[in-house]
Length: 196
Image: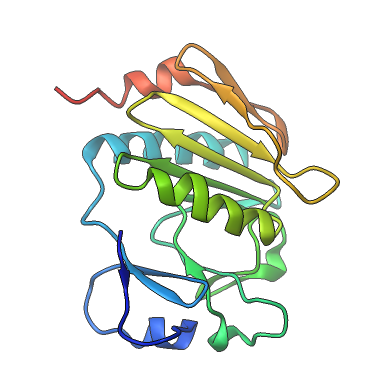
């Protein structure tokens, strides 16, 4: 995912005006073209996680969405169409229905999951980690499909993530926001076969 430097700053309006079917994200005014369609393994992990959250949240006020799903994160004072950040997390959980509209989510989801690969790891571990922390995403999971690990960053009282909890493929992850939701990683990763 490389930045496309065709102008100084992109906004959500510019993003909406891009023709064609290719997928993009805008992070702090910089336009990034997303990689081609995710791997089958990525999709297996995404499907397993989405299903777990979707089933758990039935009848709950919180809603779960998977990519492509626009999350607009305007800086203070920016109007929606002027927002310099619009991302498509792999999974977004939103508990405030006032943030949801027909375009996606306006404001920070409560929980975001990104499934990292070799090509996206630096973006997910550095750029998006700082972005989600700054915008107050309460819980951020990075699922590393090659290492078969999950890192869970939880916002503390100071508004920072601090040190993540790290889970291996033998562990069970419990979402801090939903303590009665437990995801067995052995089962999750077994449904997403390793590369040959």
